Amino acid sequence: MNLTKEQQAILDGEKGDVLARIMKTLIRYGELFGADAMVPVTSKYNHLVTSFGLKALKPVYELMDKLIEAGNLSTQKFSADPRPLDSNVPSNFLQNFIFKNFMYSRQEEYEVQLNQLGLMEKDAFTCTCYMDEVGNTPAMGEVLSWSESSAVVYANSVLGARCNRNSGIIDLMGSVLGYVPYFGLLTDEGRKAKWIVKIETTKKPEAQLLGSAIGMKVMEDVPYIVGLDKWLGGELNDAAKTYLKDFGAATASNGAVGLYHVENITPEAVQMGESLIEEGAQVYVVDDAELERVYKSYPVIWKNKEARPKLCFMGCPHMSLEQLTDWTGKIQEALKAEGKTKVCIPTVFTAAPAVLKKFEETPYAAILKETGVITSYICPLMYMNNPLSEKMPVITSSNKLRTYTSARYYTDAEILEQITKGGGK
Image 1 (tube, rainbow, N blue to C red):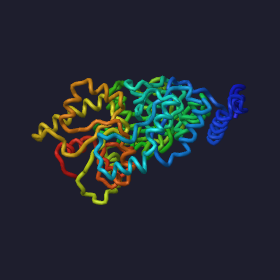
Image 2: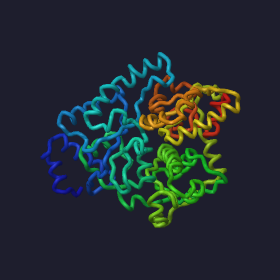
Image 3: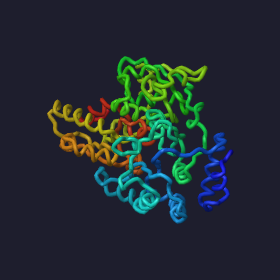
Image 4: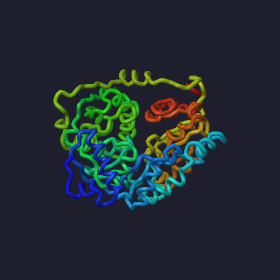
């Protein structure tokens, strides 16, 4: 590793033993991936994936204490992934007992540590920290130290920032140190596409389904997507960003994609076009039949596959303001057509606290509340990690939630039908 004089001084312990250990850890981490240098973290804010006070994370809490005691706080203010608990979300006595006594028993004291280390603000807990309402939106070309997979792929692809798919705590170390190892998606070469994905569907493909198909095909490689701009309107507006948020999360969770390029849409594709494609790139064609094949390949792991859903989660990653308002209109219209006023299945829409606050200022909030839909800042994945929640028949249109939990995937249209008409499929 070629270190600058300042970096070498940190490694030699001139700024304390704790910072020296962090430098040593990040050097080893970088060398595993062929990095030969450390580069400065240039974003204004960081984002941490570890937001939950799991009892099993004792080493993390000990590390946090050491950082705080040594005064090695984050060089940046940071946001963190969603909180794991919210009393507004339906749960029974036994579920709550497990949540509070066996799973997230250290949540309150952990949040105290996060605040001491440099949390942006009290409610800066969301996986969609890049949204305008939250305020952690990196600029094109900025170097980040993030690890939340859906946020990393969004920052790299939609914003043109630069960040590797790091692991939890590595994100914090990079922020405390102010440097990260230079490899992978931080480099120009690492951002080249090894796949050309041609979209040949007859209608706008479901974001989560398309992302799943591409993620499972290209795995950790970078895809250059052609033909999607036709369905996104040819510009990177709020609707396109919302679509790419969900699309990217599926590529990252169903595969390991950290960056994608969409022709004529994402910033690097607009600037550099096909020069981003490596010579000899493989081709993957996505048409209606391919999406149907992928959808039918999803396993249903409910004990009773015909069970009536007991809960619906929407928002993994967290919903945008546009999604909240759009879904409010859809539900209101669908319920009216059925002669109903309330949804048939307990339904939770999750979003960043800052987005929910903005939503409450709109007339849509009262309308959605009347339908019986619950809004929450919770992490659906953390809720589903409870063994009692895992046994529940839960439905979602999130491919990330489907991948990591027992939740069953349906398209947006199917979700709308089930929560307004009732019944299972």
